[in-house]
Amino acid sequence: MDWQALTLSVKLSLVTLLFLLPIGIIFGRWLAYRQFFGKSLVQTLLTLPLILPPTVLGYYLLVVFSPNQGLGLWLSNTFGTTLVFNFEGLVLASVIFNLPFAIQPMQRAFAAIPREIREAAACCGMSPGQVLWKIELPLAWHGIVSAMVMSFAHTLGEFGIVLMVGGNIPAETQTIAISIYDRVQAFDDHSAAVMSFSLLLFSMMTISFTYWLSERSEKPHV
Image (cartoon, rainbow, N blue to C red; front, side):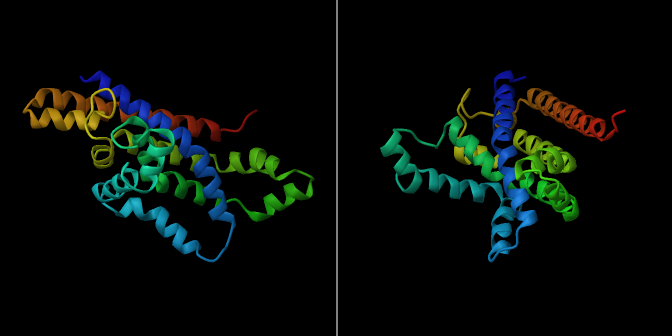
């Protein structure tokens, strides 16, 4: 078992979730409640990562992050840093790649909340922040949990984006998926099988725990 690669994968998944949670809530809620010109285009762009092959999206991100042009050049000249072949760039790429997995379930959950409930809360004098915290988030809890489960599992098994943007640098960008690929390339079938089974088991345990937490939150409190 490549514990270093597994630890890096879990770290990448958790850090990605830290960014995706507020992004998903903000954009999911916005898309659920607002009608505006160009909304279809915004939703199309957010759905692209579901359709595009990871290597295609990874290529475009590699171009954008390149220190020779655009955003990458500005970061290099301003901060002396780069987003290519390092953990920070991997996090940003993972956030972009997982946007639809985070936003779409939350959007559906917020859209399912009857408008009358929000209007009644506002009529009772609750501020928009209170409505969000005390009404909307508890009612949209299942969609939020579902989004986090899918995003975590998806990030844990990322391969194409990781390889294109992060490369294969031990302790820096070599995730468990990349390590499994390396073992297969080296004809080390035993190690590849052990890591694949461990990743499968770990993913199932994580998803089961999250769904258990979600079901527990559904039970009425006496």
